[in-house]
Length: 154
Image (cartoon, rainbow, N blue to C red; front, side, top):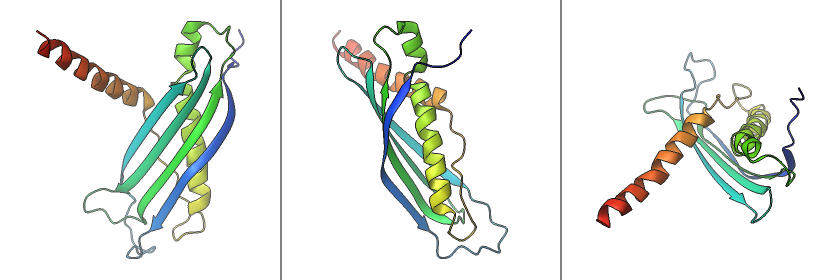
């Protein structure tokens, strides 16, 4: 069985990269980086085609009372993905959007790691992120307004 994916990334652009060092951070301290992470995604499909434009925004801020190396880390990327039109619909659902998210997040990890590498304390690697859980939350959020609309129509 061939495990190669027909998903193709045609382009990727880093639109925002903002890494703000915390001037109060002491690189000799035992403090650990402890950030709250927020990831936003937007998936757009070209009508009648298997072309997808996927935006991902990632923002990390220190947890309450945490002393971290960075005041803020923010990166936004946009990727253009393509699948052949004859791709089985079930396979499309398996690949888009989760594989696209994983690809973009991997690129973001490399960009942040390289950009932070010359800062005090060395490179910072974005933590792993659970995109399956993100999709579940988005699905629940999308169902909630529909349920509210149905109950108000009664």
